[in-house]
Length: 111
Image (cartoon, rainbow, N blue to C red; front, side):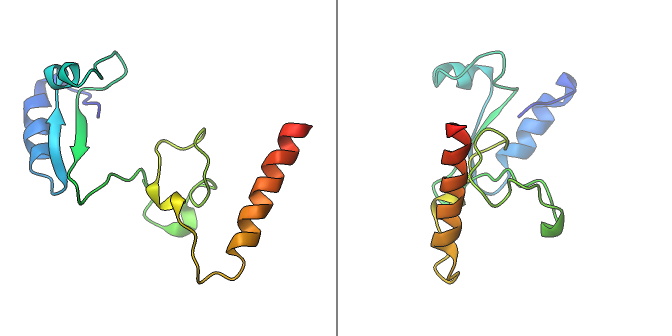
């Protein structure tokens, strides 16, 4: 997490520590302790508790979701979504759709 105004870091940290699902807020020293402190690690790193995870979804309306919202595309999206590990068994075409995506990917790498 990045904070634009360093003068409010203490206040932001206090708010983050009270967000349900946040187990730990790592500042510079905490990031060093976990060996993840580098210039692009932001002001804080949030660690979710065991019953939570953080989502990258930044859209509120599914009709306005980006094209990568429902597919595995690790190079264009800002985060990893554990939901991508599952297929909807109620969708009769789910395996066909997955196969088509793989075929498309493989044919693109051949050309």
